[in-house]
Image (cartoon, rainbow, N blue to C red):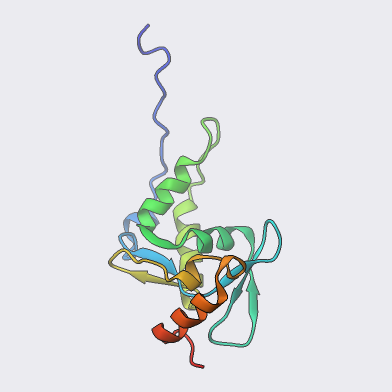
Length: 147
């Protein structure tokens, strides 16, 4: 009777890609400024080319979650935990997320580090929520862009 209402622990897939990934213990963090286009979509300012980038939902979610405070492994396990009791966790979740992190990193939109990172003000907040003078001073001080 006492175990009647006990939650059954959700069974995780093997996540072999994650287990074998050199990135699993690395922290991932944003490298580019961004802002909201509307209530669901963002655009990212590409520092390496004169363009604005929009993303599909999964890369956008990973980009927004790239706060420098969790490892790739912690993030994948967190995502797996969001699947409901009756939902099956995709077997390839780890591969998909790692591939998207690799894509974002190769586009220099996120970075990977062995230590936790604190996002600078001008990358942490969407541009529309920033004090523009404060952001500009910090951007110049950090050498993020040249004047």
